[in-house]
Image (cartoon, rainbow over all chains, first blue to last red; front, side, top):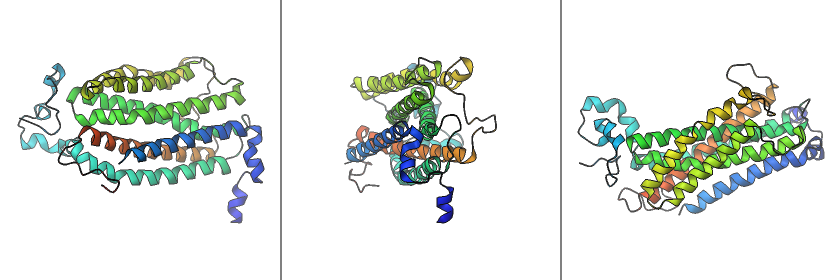
Length: 49
Length: 280
């Protein structure tokens, strides 16, 4: 476990979310990607009857 | 004379006369049929429907595992970029989405050409199934590109060769889907969509070459077939894993969608299992 945490580049969660001041850009990218992919999967599953 | 691959209700078109005899459903010798049998077996919706159904879960699991590994590596382990800071981490969505949107378009062109030449039903359905996922990936590429451009270039958007040709790719996807949807007769919609797809294929090499051919704001490729990688190992590994995960996702979704299209198109066919969530 120690070796896993030591290989991470972030000291804590807040720094991770902050992304060196680029948080909104990074999370805006990953977030929209996650939402669109979830929407595509959901629409395919709901169409399968 | 009927043949399972051919829709005999369509009028005979000029290019169909160029097809090999066996593709037109005429008698063929055993020797002629042997090497192509496996490919053509799965060119029939009837054979492909269950095969696609068996493949979807495998690609879905691979997509989840590879994406988790790639994005985990990219977000948690890869070091901060010296010049771009942490905004560069957008690359782990941006580049896989860009690759898939371009290759999916080429695949759409391939199936469109195959459908137009051989008049095979499944080819057009493959082309139709690829379009929404390709459009989604093209949109993601543009969206993440804007969010990357703002902190690194100071602009959400510039009318630069790479960005403009990528926008054209997204619009081509939308145009093909709109054209297919606008024509009531599915067979005519297939052909019209296929023709527009083929016209747009020329745009893909333009996107690929744009950063070398023109003086663009967009950076050159970080990963290339011809050069050693210029980025740190965890970055590269994360990017390749994320790309593989997105690939598996795209394949799973397209196979699932082509099954739905087959079920719609072949509605009422005797071979089609009663459609229920448990059907294979």
